Image (spheres, rainbow, N blue to C red):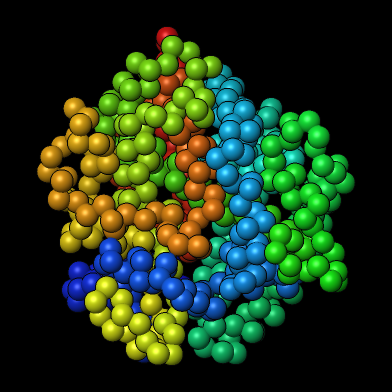
Length: 456
């Protein structure tokens, strides 16, 4: 509840090894071999139910559904996140990356000093992109000089969910909390629900797209959405309207939060490591002659940009959480160790990705470790890294369905940002920037940076 569990788990693993008992019936496991045994081996371990906040409308999203329901929802939603669909979505992603650069230029023209809070504008860009993809229209955070507080509201949801998950072990405190908080926020939640559901209704009302021009996440579902009382509910290939509402809102919250945190953190790490920043800027400006050349497609094959994103995710994953599962009654062997039945087990992303057991200089920022050995910038000392420990999007049937979308957004956003501007940290006041709390996701923190427009 203090937001420091990630730090505590790190200390416990350093003291006690790869398997640590953190509660009477719960183990934190930090070993590469455990990824497959916990998250992919059949039969699949069920998701620990207290680790997720129940949906407000009673219909599960892809994040909270289990078993056959999860399989059905994933099958229906997967088309919107395929490689083919991502290629169709590329112009929209590129549009909002360009809008971000335009907004920053406008802000700099009107500002008294060339210092802006980049975290805020990353939030607008991420939310505009995912709301357009999810609802066919954005929240227009980047256009003109608009401002809104949607990101703040979403981060508050993460903190509330963390507190609720803690209190669920101390029943009936969780019920009391739900009653109090939900009653206090009932009016606001009703407004939010009406706001976003109306956008989905408008998209569904458009019907199928014979031209194939629409590239949002709703259009592929048209014809598969059934009434909640229909006899076709829960048949393969179907999704109810309530499930669609629930998942779309959850997806918007997750994508906008994680993308904002990841991009802000990556930028801070780059600005704190001048040699790394210089290498990235050199790759970008030696590759592209103009801003228009920077596209989703053209940034896919940039080795140092990709390595920067991987190293940022390794060192400072946007969700430093554990992914808990429940061992079946008969028990299971996890990476060579027998675990008794009904035990909760999980891998904490922060712990395994910064463990000195698997990484050379684990708490330092070295994108070079993720370059291919044939790259002249690769450092052979990172041959000792155990890359099997790196699973930033998890693995198995519950891995992150939006990983391709995030990487496309992150690559083009960073590429355009550092191609167009020379950026630096003003003074020394942000040395402790990484000292943050995490409630499912890192707590938002402003990142004030100095901008100079790059002269081509």
